[in-house]
Amino acid sequence: MHRNGTTAVEEASPMTGVIHLFAGQGDFAVSPLARLTRPGGPLRPAAQEVFEQVDRVAVERGATPLAAWLFSARAPSGRDLSHAAVGTTQLALFGASMTVHRALCASFPEPEALLGVSFGEIAALTAAGVYSVADGARIAHDLGRILTACPGGMTVLTCPRPTAALLTGRPETRNLVVACVNDDHETVVSGPVRELAALEESAADKGVAAVRLRLPFSSHHPGLADQAEAFAAAARAYPAREPRIPVYSAVAGRAYTATDDLPRMLADCLIRPAVLPDVLRRAAAGHPHAFYEAGTGSALSRSTLRVLADSPVTVHAPLVETGFRWPAH
Image 1 (tube, rainbow, N blue to C red):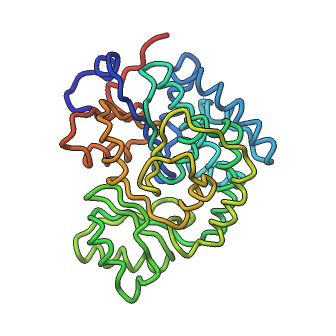
Image 2 (image 1 turned 90 degrees about the vertical axis):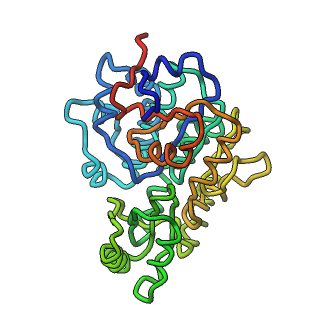
Image 3 (image 1 turned 60 degrees about the vertical axis):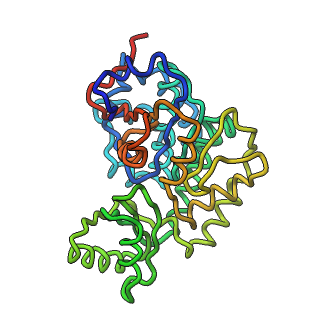
């Protein structure tokens, strides 16, 4: 994902001004995590440390412990996780994000800021020390439980926000909303499944590619106010500390402050849109040198490259980037 073709280690070693990116639930693959957490893998120590705590929460909540499953030669697919107990996928994604973050911190300069998108805000706040890993996992599981009461789905459109707004402004798609603005070329729409199907047909007629996300719920939709209240109430059960480093929220559009009601703002991810370009530009105003995606995918990194195309930064998706080198320990 980097611009100049040199290796990640050569670029990152002398740098400061690093930001870690925490993606939402739409770009989560288990296989890259399983590959790098096998015995001797560069993520193995961080994964063992993180998932020891995540698995305690899994057992506490009646779910299957994940470490032995995720790190085995027969690692589960996303479909396998979705068929497991409610909240299992969210525990796995939270643990994966924290694992990559900690492995990056152990191998490269520590980040000076963190940026979370939707579900990724839970891991970002945990990485900043606001929540313990166990409580972050509990919040992730709470959200997984609440998402079962969020009907509908989400579709990615390869178009800018104004075009997506026009497509959702038709009578047959009146209950759809723009949920996420990833960049000038990609927008996510959320709402009833039947209306998403109509949207996808209209998009095809206009030459706009549309891909339904494999998520059995809607999010970032104002119709989920009751679910957001339930999630805020659940999140209030866990103690929150001051963040050690700034945490930027794609939903809030800025960094969190000491006066923010964090449970309320996490719940806002269910009802308010996530606008990545705005918050990326705010974060980049501090002149960072490198962004690293703390997750198993690369969609957030690709959008970051597009949004900051004119900025002198490098962007990495370590688990899927060809040629990314983890230093030997």
